[in-house]
Amino acid sequence: MDGFELICPAGTPAALRAAVDAGADAVYLGFRDETNARNFPGLNFTREDVAEAVAYAHARKVEVFVAINTYPQAGGLGPWRRAVDDAARLKVDAVILADLGLLDYAAGRHPDLRLHLSVQASAANADAIQLYREAFGVRRVVLPRVLTVPEIARLNAQVDVETEVFVFGGLCPMAEGRCSLSSYATGLSPNKQGVCSPASHVRYEPRGAALASTLGDFTINVFGADEPAGYPTLCKGRFVARDTPAYLFEEPTSLNAMDLLPDLKAAGVRALKIEGRQRGKAYIGAVVRAYREALDAFAAGRPVPRSADLQAMVEGGAQTTGAYKRAWR
Amino acid sequence: MRDSDATAHATADERARRIETQLSRAGLGLVPRMGRRVSDRLFDRLLHLLTIRHPRAFTAFRAMPDACLLIEPVDTPMAFLLRVGPNLSLRALRRGAAAPGDVGGVTADAVVRGPYAQLLDLLEGRIDGDALFFRRELTIVGDTALILALRNTLDGEEMDLLADAMSFAGPLAHALPVLRRNAGSILDRLDAARRLLPSPLRRGLARVEARLSGLAPAPEA
Ligand code: SF4
Image (cartoon, rainbow over all chains, first blue to last red; front, side):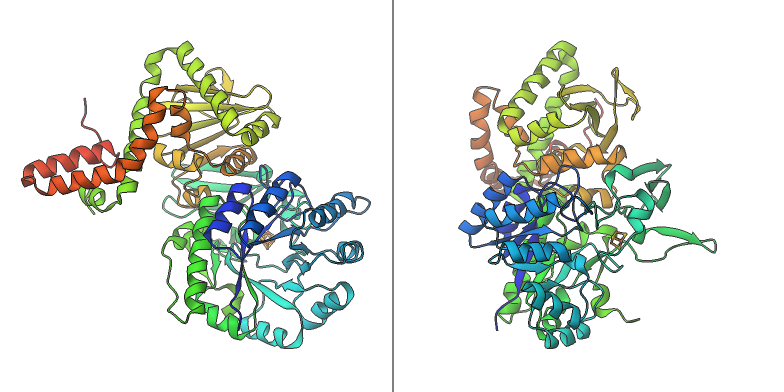
C-alpha cells in the first residue's frame, strides 16, 4: 500500500522552501488577498511568488496546492475567479475550494485542474462528499476536524474520493466554514474575509505579571505569570461562568495525531495535513522534518520517533488528539 | 544544570552562534558613545544595505502606512525604532523610554520586547516567534497587526543580519565566513586543549566562556 502523502503549509516563499527542503510531498499556500482563509498582514504569495514557488517545488518533485477557500461575496466574484484562473495558468497541482459556485466555475472553465474540497466546506458525510465528486469531479476532500477515527473509516468505505486529514497544528472545534464567533466580535470572519480573530482587533495588555489578551471589546483570556500564552481566538477563550473562569469551548491546545498513524492508515486516509500557514519558517521546517521522519519510520515498519521539540512550539504548550479520540463523542 | 555544564553540552555551532550574538551585542554597546549623528548615519547605511539585499521585504515596508515599531532587547542599553511607510527609517536610541508613546520625539505604535539573542534569531527566522510568545519570552504591546505584518514580511526572507552588517565593514566582511566555517573546529580544539589543563584553570576558562556567550552575568565593572 502507498505511504501517506504529507501536505505542508507555507505563508511565505521562505517557508515554502523550508517545507520542501524538510520533506513535504505537497505544499499548500494562498494568494495575498481575501480569497484564502489565512489572509493575515504580510503573509501569502503574489502571482510572481507562486510562479517561483511552483518552479522550486516541481524541480524537487513536490506538488503545490493553492487554497482559494473563502466564500465569495455576492456581486464581487472577480477576485475568486481570477485566483482560480491564475492558479491554473501557473500550473499548480490542485486548487482547494469550498464554495459551490466557485467549484462549478473551476470545473467548467478548467477541466484539467485538480479540485480538492477544503475543510471550510465542512463535508462530513458520505452523501455530501459523493455529491461534490459527481457534480464537480472533486478528487480529494479535506475532512473537518470533528470526526473520530472510526467515523473516518466508515466514510472512506462509502466514498471513492481520497481523504486528507489534519494531523498537526491549531484546531477549529466548531463546524468549519460555518463559525461566526470571529464575525460576532469583530465583523470579520475566516469564511468571508479569510481571518479568524484578526490581528487588527487583537491587543495584548500586561496587567502586572499577568497578560490579558483582548479581541475587539472582549477580554478573551488573562494568563498568569507562569502560564503559557495563546491567541485570543474566541473558541479558546477563558470565560467566567458561575464565578469560575474556565475554557468553555476548547482549551488552547494543539492537535498532534502522530500516535494515530496506524489507525489513520487502517481508516483509509490518503494524506496528512499540517496546519499553520501563519507560522514562521522555523516552525514549519521543524514540524515537517519531525513528520517526515515519523512517516518514513512508519512506512518502513520501524518505531515512530517522538520529537520533543514539537511540544515547545505549540499553543498552550499542550497537545491533543482532538476529535479523533474524543471520548465524549 | 550549571552554566558551565550547559556550555560544555552545547554543540560547537550553538556555542559559536552564542559567541557571535554576544559579540554583536557588545558592538551595540558602543553605539551610544558614537553620538547621535554618527549613529543615525550608521543605521541609515545599514537600512540602505538591507534594502539592497532584501528588496522584497523592504519594498513591502515602504508600501505600508506610516507607523513605528519599537524593538527593545531587554538585555542591552539600546532600543531600535523602525519606521515603516514612505519615510522608512531605522534609529537606535537609549532603552527605557515608555511605549507605546513618545520615544525620542516619535510615537511608537507597537513594541516588541525580549532578550537580544532571541530577537536576533527571530529576525533571521531561526526561531519561531509564536512559540516564543506562547512561552512568554517575547512581549508585544500595541498594534498587533503592525507587528504581525513586519514579522511575516521578515520571515519571508533568508536574512543573515550579521553578514549583512559586516558587508560594509571592509576586510571584516571577508573574515566572517572564514571565522564561521572554522568556529566549530576551533572550539573543538580548544575543548581538547582544555581537558589537559589543571582543574582550577579549567573552571576559570569555563566561567570566561559562559560570560562571553551570555550564559553568566559579567562581573560588575
Ligand atoms: S473561533 Fe475557533 S472555531 Fe471559530 S473559526 Fe475561529 S478558530 Fe475556528
